[in-house]
Length: 364
Image (cartoon, rainbow, N blue to C red; front, side, top):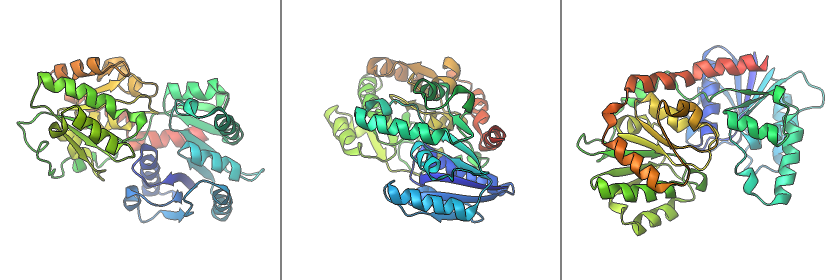
């Protein structure tokens, strides 16, 4: 079977990583895989298996020429199955499909529609119309959480019968090997330093400002506590300024995107996600897979599902810096209370192998 996977780019986002994970898995298992990318830049590009045909449309912005180039690529490749992994790409795939085709099409919806509700109403109306047209051309839409599915149905993008909930394919079979790589970080390399880790795009959605505010309260109880924020994004300067204003700049380290973040997860004492909303929450699964305890905001999206209503981690209200701080202090002092093997077992429910098979089954 020939499968075509479509992604916007190879930047450091969760959806882009999933596209590469799936492409590599399918290629490894004997499928004919082509990976179509609108703008083929980003760190995940170097992780692509050499057997995969890469088609870079070289489109910097998703406009009219993107539609034409994608349509030509689909026509030239003639895949039996198309999997598009992110909303913007989904829309263009739907617009690019011929009226009559024998291609099985799956869209993966990567996020709830929280951001959608925050844009001006005219843009929101146009975007919604485009989504309705495009998504109804897919045979199945895979939502990565119940909240994501609910948003698609409430906004009348697709009918409930055309949506299936499948968690993200996060964990590769080389995780343990990668987690064992040498880590060169002063705090995380020292067994005597207690470190809170956050991994994610530096963006208002991820609300690292909440994390910094909570951390500034936590260090009053645990003065030697450290915070490592791993990621890049447009909010970096604002967050660095905030850490200085809060007086915690000496206890916070901003680390650039890492191809292999797993040694960071493994070495950290605690992982914290501070988002206002999520599609799924890949980083929670990655932390659990390394046996690292998790605290997450109980935001729309996947965190509550992944953590099984608090069984595998702590959920705190969105925007509540005091509660987040309290839980950070409680759990940094009681890390041994967690069953690390249970955390890892939960993460293994979201392996690439398990989920990739479910994707193919859902498309039939």
